[in-house]
Image (cartoon, rainbow over all chains, first blue to last red; front, side, top):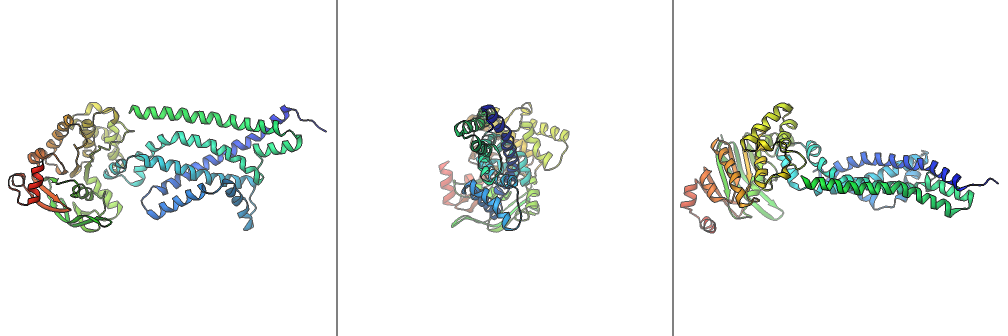
Length: 219
Length: 241
């Protein structure tokens, strides 16, 4: 029987980490774009559309990500479509991320005094111009740190996609454990790799928070 | 023909009727102060004129454009009517110059160089040309309010609405703002102001309008309103000042 050295295990895990990273990045980018759209729908004045956008956010925030993954994977099959695991994983994570990001940003946009909206409106700016020149530049500054911080949640969220058969870091860990019978070494290394990915991002988020807040106060 | 014409304006928040049938015509070049106790509806009335508040009944015409028309009409109307707020509401992420240039460049599509010249001219008019590159947070309250006036003037409005523009200022900063408003009045700008500065209102206004419980209770030239108030409510209000 072929033996596995710790080095072999680590190498295989790091190779699988590529997929964790790729999925995280894809979900984050997708979530960013969709989240921006949801945000726009959320803070505009047609009440029923705003309610719809709020409902979207609540729906994804109030159900487990795991269920969302199952639904994204199995629902298309009902209609005769066979969706590959990575597509289902990416779609589910994108929607999940968009809901949380839209909610973070909505909070930031609403943190601005209503006088900012009124001043812009009374100068004759349209809704889109108001958002573009007055609200978003200020809201995004407040939102940068929590947005970067949320990336940590996305990376950890990708671990759940192993359950629908997407081979990323966690799934690779399980497979290697089944072959080596060394769960402690394997899962210990898996955890360390997640930590190595997430910790610098969390630190970066905290650094941004200090830096952007300080810049804001200096105004 | 009046520049601003309010006819039988009604507004309520739920059960609470705050404007109970207001009719008021404002001529070009006229300087008007809305006075009255807090809660009498004067700020609400002012905010209705440029559509920041909606209303249930009646009509508002500004230079022939109705406030109730489409969002596009409302935007056009807002370009003709400037507003100055109690809390200044400058954009803190933009320099003073950019604050003034924003609406001309974005809304009127004025070219950058032209807009900058215009902004410098307007800032000069309020005595703050040298603060062009400063951020609002680096200015005193009085200076911020003067920038807000320059920002409104840069759209070359037909009238300015002033909503208690000195109420958030320290007493020693009030005069520099009032001096700017006084100049504007002299130059023939149409001004509608909500104010508690009775001495100032008496000095610069052509007409004072006293509001009481959502109605226009009494109005007239300053001498008449101050020296010969006819209603008990106005007498009581002036007695409190």
